[in-house]
Amino acid sequence: TWTTGNVIEEQVAAIREQVGSKRAICGLSGGVDSAVAAALVQKAIGSQLTCVYVDHGLMRKGETEQVEKDFVAATGVQLKVVDAQERFLNALAGVSDPETKRKIIGREFIRVFEQAQAEIVAEAGAGGEDVAFLVQGTLYPDVVESGGGTGTANIKSHHNVGGLPEDLEFELVEPLRQLFKDEVRMVGQELGLPDEIVQRQPFPGPGLGIRIVGEVTKERLDLLREADAIAREELTAAGLDREIWQCPVVLLADVRSVGVQGDGRTYGHPIVLRPVSSEDAMTADWTRMPYEVLARISTRITNEVADVNRVVLDVTSKPPGTIEWE
Ligand code: XMP
Image 1 (cartoon, rainbow, N blue to C red):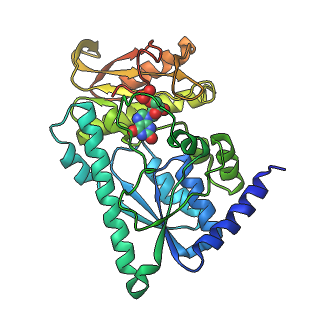
Image 2 (image 1 turned 60 degrees about the vertical axis):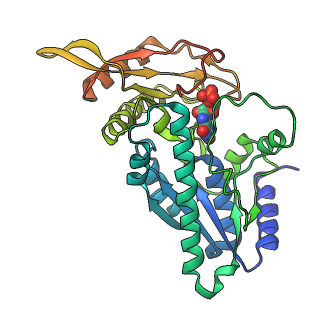
């Protein structure tokens, strides 16, 4: 019979058998899959595992701390954090085109991750060749999807910690290959991971970089982080986290509109709320959520986030709109 206990036991045995006395590396993205995969491998081989977290500065408020503190506290995992915020900002400077942003973020991510891998191998000294395994949070639907079939047209170049790296000198460890998302969540819960990680809604690999329409700058990221944190806080408080599949919060950095606040005229940016209901993100409908909650989010964002004087609601389904704006 299928129980999370059995799955964990089975996978721990399989990982031990595969890795033996060698060492493994796992990239953490802050998402559910990589976290649960890492926790399973940690349970199996302990200090033979090193996790890498690339802080690209495009995460939402509190997410990096969740990985650095809560995840480490829950698992005892050895974590190497690479602060690459400057590097990503520099690479993204002057770029507004969505696909170009996606490619830059994906490219920089791979470079930083590979550099971290090389450092881990170097730090292992003479035992460097023992660093032979790369852990990935591949799920059953990913396996099926990449196993042929015609697939859909490539609308956006996706970026995941998943597809790394191309020139494999590492053997893959994929302990979630037989699991669906809800099963991964159950396993994560059983392994004692924090709810904020296990129940996290989908969040794109390129992060807030593709939720700023226009150039990505530090100031705009900070602004969007504040607006997003308010929206998430209110949606959670209203008990809407399950009904809503995800709610991208988007900054229209290239748009300004006239407003009035306090003593005078403002000329600020709009924030877009994009709450969607979906089964699998392939199609989606905009969520008919309560006006009171929308009102609260709007009031708080315009009051609390400097330079934002308007909040608008995206009422487009997918298709024709995608979930993300870029
Ligand atoms: P779209 O915008 O294509 O998004 O309707 C569908 C789902 O995929 C997420 N998304 C991504 N996830 N890397 C990811 O891991 C990406 O590059 C990426 N782009 C979009 C999006 O949040 C939604 O859940």
